[in-house]
Amino acid sequence: MLLLSCRGLKKELAEKVVLKDVNLDIAAGNRIGLIGRNGAGKTTLANILAGQEQAEQGTLLRHQENMRIGYLLQTTAYTENHANPTGIDNDQLGTLIRVGSELGLANIGGWSEEHLKASSGGERVKLALAKIWISNPELLILDEPTNNLDLRGLQWLIEQLRAFRGAVLMISHDRYFLDQTVDRIIELEQGVTQVYHGNYSFYRREKERFYQSQLHRFQVEKKEQEKLRSQINRLDNWSGKAHAQSRKMAQKNSTRKEFYRTKAKKLDKQVKAKIKRMEKQKKDGIKRPADEQQISFQLKIPERHGKKVIEVTGIEKSFDRQSLFKESSFYIQHHERVALLGENGCGKTTLLKIILGEERADYGQVWLSPTIKLGYLSQDMRELDLSENVLATLGGDRFYNSETRSLLVKLGIEQAKLKRPLAELSLGERARLQLARLILQQCNCLILDEPTNNLDLPSREELEKALLDYPGTLIIVSHDRYLLEKLADRLIVFAEGRVKRLEQGYRDYRNRFDCEQSARKRRDEKMRMENRLSQIISQLSLYSPTDPEYQELDREYQELIARKKLE
Image (cartoon, rainbow, N blue to C red; front, side, top):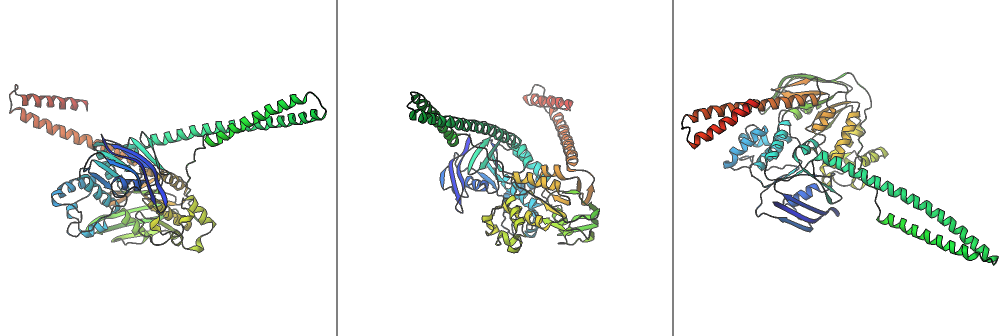
């Protein structure tokens, strides 16, 4: 059953055509991933579908009256209300607390205005998801829902989307998430949409297959054009000789002049036919497929430093009378790629700020090598002054040289945008601008807090390559599973109120985590079965074997016993 259809949508922003000819159908049960480069118009399209913006041309038809749409914005905004920080009526508060608890949010009902202000990006995303979920939407539109979500929140969202009966349109650059949740990819490119029936991995394979197929056809046609050009040159040469022979015979009054004249005309006709054929191929033939734009991150460091670069001894930190971590010690060595893992709100960003010297630990010490030069990429980009332009953010005109120009081009930041305020840049462009600052500073230790947030898929893949080649030290907070599996060779884990170092990579840790989760689910299921069997046995005593209730309970009992034997 169709829920929503649009045909020929067009939208301009700042005199630029963002949406040119968008056609889209969304039916109940659809799981759609909307992808495209930063600035391609994905969020604009989501706003139009949600009714928050209007297209300038085209039609948008909702097939159900008063259709409930749950819309998670890319940048979740909250009205801070001291009396009711969650923004939820009291009759829905119980449901919100239950859903929030499943996501890992503790005591939402008791959140103060100060708690909401100080909450992490992940906690805010979870709160927004919980509020959307309890509204029972028929269509979900999720714009970057996995940004800042921890493993628990991500797994919850995946499971809920699998069970959700309505339709879902997701804008995401999280490859693992798209593989797990969608059965259709819609790519928005140059203002038009292209549909791929499969998950993200299928889309990448199909996109590459189409590219190679079109490239092969283009190359075959190009060879044919070269062959035609060679034939034209050869025929043109023969025609010239025939015309010369005809003129020579005419001067001699020879009867063979007509022979050469006829031959020349025949050759001229062949030349014209082949030229016409070649021109038609150039006009209507197969075009060379556009290569995917390459974003290049070249991260450099000016010098080496000692083996141990950071050592943390016995640190403790509390917030609002609640302990984040205590009696925690760990170290980080040169060239290690370390991932910080923990649930939202556990204190990862706080720990980073303590290492950076922006906050103080309540107890303990943090030692930094005297040769370390830290570079910090924050997840919220609050340090950016949105009224400044790109040049001012990079240090002004005196820092704008050939190296800077080349870097900005590689990062996909156009020269036309150098004088524009950052408020006019997309979130992805702002993230790449922050990376540009780190590259120009040549830091030997990078602290990256959700570095792939707001980066499009090609930019994420290029960033991974650059970080793999980076010769310095990396400290990464990320929920991008692909990024962590490729990069992290050591872990700093927040668990049971402490921070500890693990001598393993993310892939091994995740495999162990998945096994433990599966084992826990099996234990919970077994306990539920045992409890239900006990209930059935006690209820059977209330009925006679001939009663319909007895027979129904007996049937359920036999099914549970059969399931138990299979385990």
